[in-house]
Amino acid sequence: MKLLIGGYTKKSATGIYELVLSNTGSQPQIGSAKEIIKVGGPTYFVQDHDLIFTINNAGEKGGISAFKLIDGTYQETDSYLTPGSSPAYVGINKEKQLIYTANYHTAVLAVLSYTSQGKLTLLDSVTHTADTLGPRPEQVDGPHPHFFDETPQGNLVSCDLGNDRIDFYSFKEQKLTHLASYHNDPGFGSRHIVFSQDGKYFYVAGELSSKINVVQFNEQNWTFENIATYSTIPAGFTDHNGAAAIRISQDGKFIYVSNRGHNSLAVFAIKADHTLQLVQHIATFGEFPRDFNWDENEQYVVVANQNTDNATLYTRNADNGCLTPIQKNIAVPEGTCVLFE
Figure 1: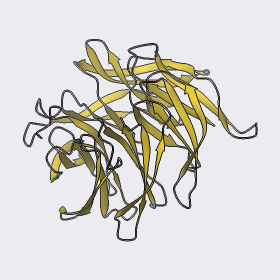
Figure 2: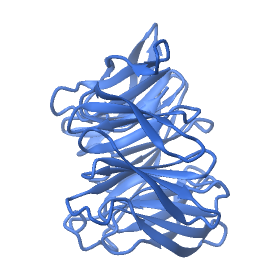
Figure 3: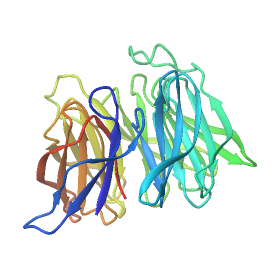
Figure 4: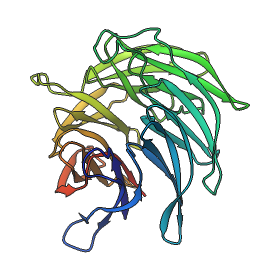
């Protein structure tokens, strides 16, 4: 089993690394990281078979680059770069061959198409404006969309940290059209979102507040009901923390959030009424865990610690959601994105 980890390239990192998880010993172990793609700042990326689409920080320009596996090595096939900062998030629809990007710094949301040969074409984009900026220092300088991907019914949704807002769009005839907005509390810092199995609830991770907001919604008439909000960190923790990635298990029973500062993964059980119950805080054994991910069967979880250049491997109990660390201090530089192949 292989996984990919990429991130910033400000220190020793040079691109995207491949690591192999093997079961040959007494317990699963992850081997040494091997660079497979040299690219600037691959802080987020997605994969479609032999294609990898990654953020590319190319100096004065930033955007998305496509790499195709040819004769055993990844070769760049195309790039879509624009002046200024690179995006913060990349989403994908493999059936429609669409890429979705959110640019934290330029406030641009974009939809691109791609071919099986890795050629990219911009289809449409929108730019968020400073309509409902929050009160925190990270918000007052403008809108900051941090997520752009699909809803359960195939619309698109963005999380805007600057505006404390969730925005919904349709994408028809290669055109983005705004449909509705949901507003988090001022200073919440909306970052990432996941949806319930039935498509009637969503869970938003607030980076600046270190909270999860549970919302019931109707994707036909765009009504919203704020159900509850939960802290991702213990009540007694007073140091700086920023919630980052949020994921929901395939069975819809558990939610996981990474805490940068508390340096932990928070595990919540989803109750029958879609409210949450904290079941675990587990250390990431490193500093500033931005992203984590699991294998196809959700048996193993890997978290990357950006500031300490290491990752941690856990096994996951599907019955109670809890994680058990089985390997620490896996060397990988500046990791911010984890993806099992």
